[in-house]
Image (cartoon, rainbow, N blue to C red; front, side):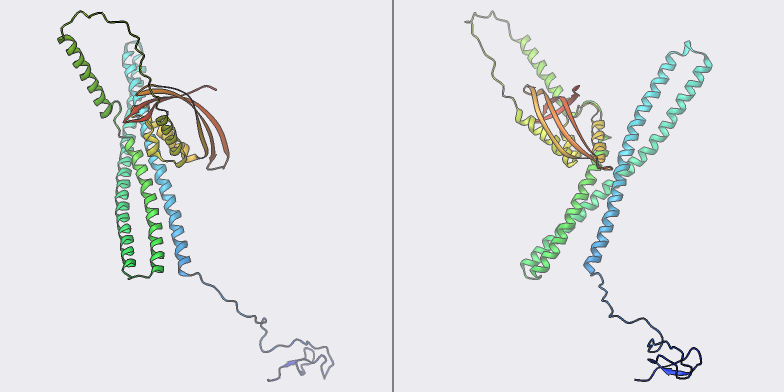
Length: 378
């Protein structure tokens, strides 16, 4: 090992590292040992663990899922906003048409200037509404087409994934792939299929919401068919009454005939209430709509109200008590009390409420449907 020399800071005399006094001027020397240039003491280098490939892929997938959720939330909000504005514009159009009609009826009773100015304002408003309606209609059509295309793509992807799952099982049965590898790949495929199915369910809900906008108002085909059948039946009975000659009835012994006892279909009523409960807890708009009769007044608004509620709150408790019922063969009235507890999605606040409702129901295709709801005063 070579000697390390330093110079005395006072006289310049060279000395070996380790001496405390200079031989020449007896000055106090710096006793710090240095081997070459001053460097910090070395420590064992810590091993750096790089993330494995699977961890990296999981992080990428997680980020992609977050982006997809944001896009889907934007799409949901856009669908609801477009439909809501279309309904508002429809109401605005009716209002201005009514104002214009009233103005024409009172034309002779108001000054010409007031009439002319009001008419111009109403007509301009109607033109603006028509323009905005056209824009929204284009957005609405574009949304519907895009969601329809996305549904078709998802259905194709699911068919492809399920085909791969089937092939994987066959390969495992014939020994072309190890059981361990088969389980890993099968889990990945099943997870992907589940994710695609959830996405497809969401797209179909959006498509269903968009389809509600195009349902014709008034009587549907089923209701019309029932009415026509009823009318034909009445005509047939009247024809028979006219054709059959009247005969003097023979006196019959007095008999007391008791009306047959009708069995109340409470099981079907409870099934309806359970469907309403499940639809709210699971936020299933298709199941929710199936609980209502087609002639329910303002069904679109009722569905829109439910979607808004689900967007802002999560149900954490939902139970009901069937308090009373008057049920006939095909229609009835029930009184039901709902005990509700929800949590707001933005602040996390819990809210408890109680709804006492009078519900008018009708039997449609052997299942009870809600026809009208009145909230009782508490």
